[in-house]
Amino acid sequence: MKKRSYNFMLLFYMVFMLIVINLHQSYNSDSFSISNNLEALEKFKIKASSNNKIIIINNNYELNKTATSGNGTLSNPYIIEDFTINGNGSLYCILINNTNKFFTIKDCTLFNSTNGIYLNNVSNGEISNNQIFDNLKTGIYMIDSVNNSILINTIYDNKIYGIFSQESNLTKITGNHIYKNNYTGIYLNMSNSNDVVLNSIDCHQYALFLHSSNHSSFIYNEGVNNQYSIKQINCVDNTFDENSFKIISPSRTIDGDSSDNDYEEIIIDFTIVLVLCFLVFLVFFSSRRKLLTKKKLTEK
Image (cartoon, rainbow, N blue to C red; front, side, top):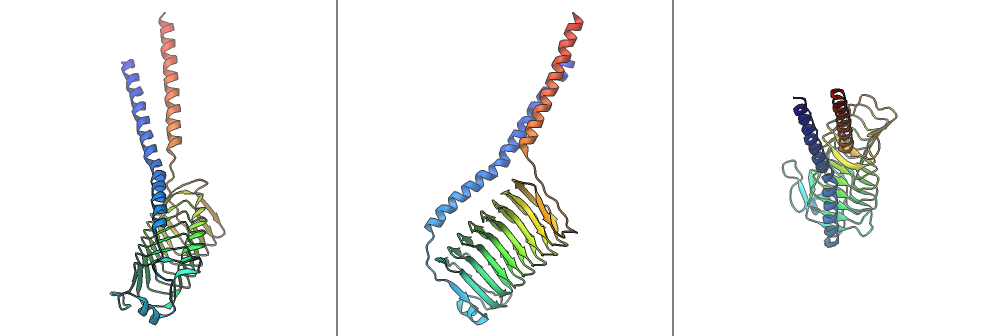
């Protein structure tokens, strides 16, 4: 009976270790998928050509002239779409100043400028499904703007920030893949009441950086290979829920006044779990062997 129990425990630990190994391999596959995406996008960048000029819009009238369709209402926004713009080292690929009509920038490829998209004193805009990369500073830069949405874009290889928001409120940043923007994925500076949801933020020094930005929600964001997940300076009343980051260093660095914040992060290293399981098995096996040896000696 004891031998059967011993065999059962041995089988249990072996099966458990195999499950852990499988989970570990599945988890690490994230890094392989990122590498594959990077390779594919590098090829895409080589193929991208400049077939459109830089877009500069300074008011609602110019927005109307530039748009390919729409009338600037909520139900029928102005549409700017299907542009491929090589900024050739300029300050921006698309600049929009001083507008409050509804508009959408979508399905554009923007690269090789200082800022891919620059919004200044803009409201009611939507930026969706664009490829924004290889800009000297930022993929999307917003200043003094309100009630804008940044949805389902791919923003990568910009030299400092993926998305930078300066004194801009009520922004929805949702469903974007943001990676390899050397310093920060999403940076909010003096920007309040924003919703940052369901973004994938990989390979930065900071995934999220908040400075004097309050009353915002950060939900269901995830990322790998960021040095730090979240940094806050002088922030209050922000909510963090169900965010998951696999990071290089400690999960968060918080400075200044960052009270009333709710954190929930999931960080699991299956390598450690595997090693611990193996050690438990060795201890069990060793102690069991000693007991059997002692029993044999006693019987003799």
